[in-house]
Image 1 (spheres, chains in turn blue, red):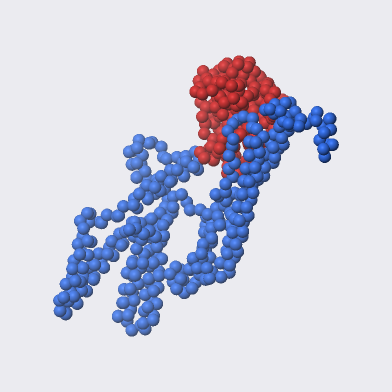
Image 2 (tube, rainbow over the protein chains, first blue to last red):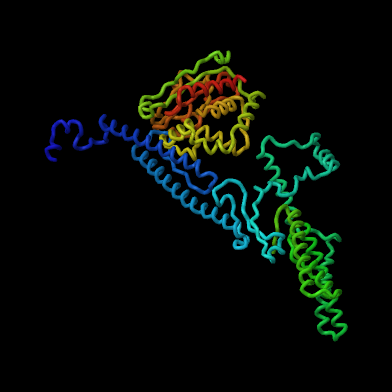
Length: 345
Length: 218
């Protein structure tokens, strides 16, 4: 080795010590070649990252960012190396992320198969398209057939959704719901002679629809007013009912029993009125209360007034309860703009 | 060649590229042409072309864009000059982003709409200057120490790649244009400039200028 390093011709080509500032033509040339090589690597990696970007769609949350160095300017070898290294690291990260997601997506596909084969073992499980790496809003949901009745009877099935919900919910836009007379009146008020035309693009229409939905939502934010105005009739009736209940405990029978029964009836009626008002205004759902208000009387009437055996009375009451719960749920969904239930403090 | 419009008076002319830049970035080029054109709002024909273009471009094209040869070449060049193409988008990606974001290619004015059509159709980076305020031929070079860009408070950092005429920088490459050098209300002659990088064929530059020029003539 010493002989090799001491060779005169090599010393002429490669200086033993880099000159100060590395500004000889030889070193400039070397750096230029290194930069060109790094640029080729960056180009190849950029293409690899672009392909990963294309194949990753529609998955979200994958980080493809590789920071710049500030430019536009000529970058040094060090800077190009940093970009190259960051690109390499990013490609590895994205590949690992995609691999992990692919495993999860495959297991979710298998879950869909199992759900379909045996729905009763996967009650209420829901798998979205997003969970299996596909675009769209489709989902597989294990639900009971015929609502609560199916839940009690064990009639489970996989229901496949029909796609993304409309921006408007289930109700058509306001301007379509209004009658001709209302539309004419509105046009006169706003001084617009022409009927509303759709915007130039879907996004614009969606914006208008979103505003409409927001407007309707704001209506649901307020408790619906009573038909008799601001007079606190329900509250007074509830108060009287509670008062009768308390007093009925201290009054000897039979007056005491009558007072308790009347108090219970009054309080229930007032509560039921409030429940109906809130439920059908889409403000708060009272499905179970209202369904019980149907099911319990049915059971009571059959039990007291007929000679039908008790199990059949119970079944009839349950059927009435389940059916009315389904109807009340649908009614609330229509009036709330798509929500199945809504709880408020 | 019989299809070339009669109005194609000025043939695309190659600009100069500083020797340092040319050595570092083989394939870097600049082509320009000057056209008589008034500014102002786009005529209906041009706006109709934008609408048709809006219908042709959607989400799938946006996702696949960076895998196409010309947009990819610009992304690579952005990396080479220290720009992050996801932050400082390439001209074509910026336009496609706006298309997806706004739901259409919004019409701005005649020159910008013509540039939009040229860039989206071909993928090449285009920009426009007021031809009467350009002195000599345009080219690409590195800024020198203390050099100023009109409208910018601080001097340009030394070594910044600029589009320049023979007197001064007209704008930073893929960035802001010097104040008063861009197309304005008083512009009568528009200089269309196409910037090519390695991987973008010369014919694409000429085609982009031709498409943008036809938009200006609409």
